[in-house]
Amino acid sequence: MLSFSVIIVGAGPGGLACAKLLAEHGLDVLVLERKPVAGPKVCGGGITWDGLIRRVPEHLIEGVFPRQYIRSNHQQTVIKSPDPIVATIRREVLGEWMYRQTLEAGAVMKTSCLVQKITPDYVATNQGSFRYRHLIGADGSSSIVRRYLNLTTDKIGVGVHFQVPGNFDRMEWHLNDTLFNNGYGWIFPFKGMASVGIYGAKPYNNPKQMLTCLRRWAALQKIPLNGLKPRAGLINFDYRGWRFGNIMLIGDAAGLASGLTGEGMYPALVSGETAARVIINPDYDCHELQRLIKKQQKHRRIVSFSAKNRLLNIATMEILILALRTGLIPFSMLEMAD
Image 1: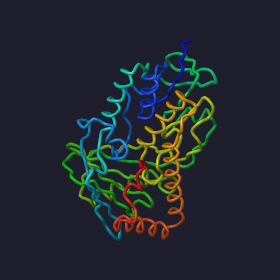
Image 2: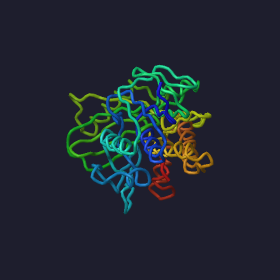
Image 3: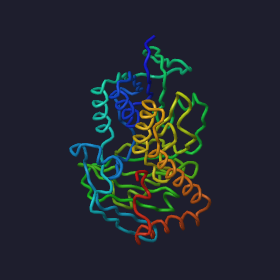
Image 4: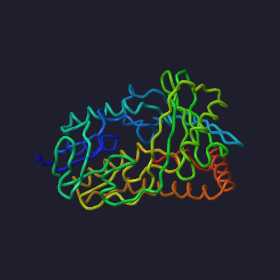
């Protein structure tokens, strides 16, 4: 049985960032990915200026937006900035770029590799069993590593979107209480298409009902969805800790996504790099991750408060947009990046 210093389950942004950093510091790392290729996931594809934009090569970015158009049932505003606030990148493109970087750093990668069993000493897969000293769960909202740790997951968000062909030039956020409850609809432009979707948190939003509402909203926006196939994904924001002895959880596996916006890529990156640095140096100060966790908890409280009843939800959303309009809070308050 082969042995590795670190085994990482999952080759999303968090897992790959963690593996690359560990490999660059000379550790032997094995990454196990159940899909044939790294990266693809249902995702709106928005990355923030303070988060991933400055870490990604410019030629991979498809759209850059210094203006954000935000609308509710009762008001609308445009948030402007001299720097790009949000950019768009295809998740599969980001995954392929990070995958190549991780291989070049010296990590061992196994795709189409399904984890079947986890023990305190080894991980059994359909491609053999492997011993580990450290195990990282980077395997998303349905994490098998999280289940091995007996951590339940009650706070889950749902994202549903269509990839709509056409030329779209505005990045839009729609807070419509009638259609989205305490979630939101989005239009994120890419080259020659846009991600048009809806996000909401369960149990406040039902996935089947969300799809119906998404179709209704798209029709109101005069965005044709006929013949297009919807895609859906889960977002885990049920954070219950990330470090459990020699086992760590990162990204959605740890429940670090934002329950308010569904943003998960930046938390995955930060937690992945933090896990790597803690393995490299057990005395590492995890200040960046701690700041992110505090913001994640704030977002979770807003979601829980707004879900109490419809009037509270409407008041919360309208006050939020008013505060953005008047500059009382920055747009970055909605982002997981600082």
